[in-house]
Amino acid sequence: MLTTGGRIPVFFNSEGRQLAKLRRLHPDPITEMHPETAARLGIADGDWIWIETLRGRIRQRARFVDGMDPRVISSQHAWWFPEEKDPEHGIWKSNVNVLTNIEGPHDPAMGTYHLRALLCRVSKAEEPVSPS
Image (cartoon, helix red, strand yellow):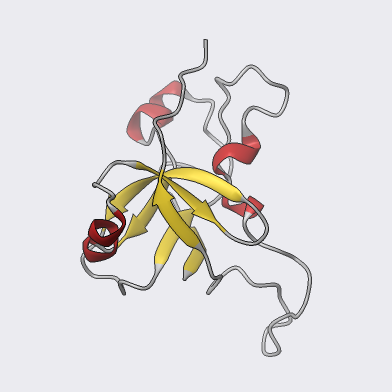
């Protein structure tokens, strides 16, 4: 089960990724997961992982959190890579918005689209290639 939108204290939503000092503090997109879940999937703390839904696939780094439900992962939102030379700066590589959907059915209580409790698949990914 995927939940999204956890805040990153270093950044304000998608802002600040281009600031070297802030990126040194938080260089990579993080997905939090329970260590037991990761062990079952052959994932070590700090490994790059794929997160997939019916809508798409992104890559983030695994971070182990003992205090969360082993059936849930929490992925950070709003990632892009100013160091990437393409015009979109790698926005589709790790941005969790790729995995969500604004189509209905919408939550009956809040009237919003689903950002929480999305079914997903997680697997170990290869290390990303550094931009040249």
